[in-house]
Image (cartoon, rainbow, N blue to C red; front, side):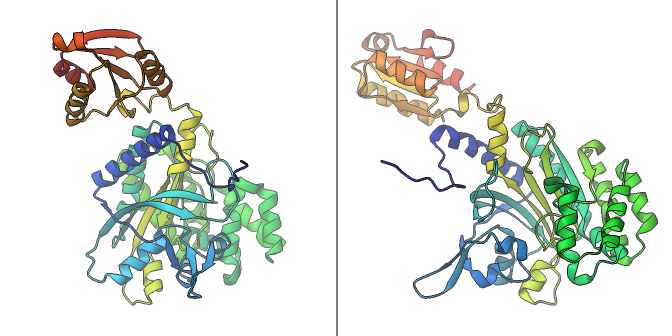
Length: 435
């Protein structure tokens, strides 16, 4: 039977999902460590909510899945989790601030498919609402390095500020109605190159003199972070640009308090991110070795979305980020998961093979499981076939339970990798396996 596979989607078999769940487990553990609480929101949403001018912007709407239900209502699949958080804040006025939450769930985008980028993928979001200080932004960077250190990936963070970009737009005299599109085109510099960005700017009506001045400003920023900031302080004198520069200085100051190496957090003036709602600091996380071109995590400050979305007079400063489970998985896969998955991660960790001792083997399995050891009992295969099964499944340990072992009050444990067998009491086996 020819079964069609929808491009941009995929299924994960158990060996793959074990790895994905371990990644999620690390993320959840770190999120909680930094004081974030779990939340879950609906995948389906009114299209009018997703298409709100205070949501993701025109670029993301091009990739939004739209559908009509049986009642004729216009719905859509969520394209990210941030807009859902804004809605939750609006529906729950009793929420206390600062509100720190994480959410892990599926999102959907009808965009280009490439390595690490699918139509249906899992986002792992973490946000704090109600804090203006750049200390909150720096905390996300500290948490990012904490997370990727445990995952085993060496990363760098590229940082910019949307207010500074708006200040640059004002300095270059880009018309206000073209500033967002110009910023989003500039963000594609690494993807389509300078010539591609220039062509986009020409098509959107930006003059040659403005394009030349824009690149002169962006390319003039060189050297260390402090040298780049000093460069912009000399040429950007408008209020919005100065505010962005001050936020960057505060941000890097707090990063130093977290003892983050300067070389790992890089000020990149062309970085804009692809969503229109960012208001201040923005960052993207990349592998240092460049084996995956897509960012493995990204985030930024979105101070205006909730206020505008709710049409409220109250301020809801907010900052957050997302970790891409699928792209992190692909990055680990390219390293053949070396050092990431150990014997204790295998499911099951132990396979019990009864030799005419099924009842007793089930009792042994219960004791192993009660001790927190992942255990299975194979009930319909002979010894040779059961060992072959364990080997092909990558099960680390086999326990063989025969009448002779039971009479001696021991079990026979076999290390499948070392191909060694040892007889010992079950209590000692449990102690060894729990390590």
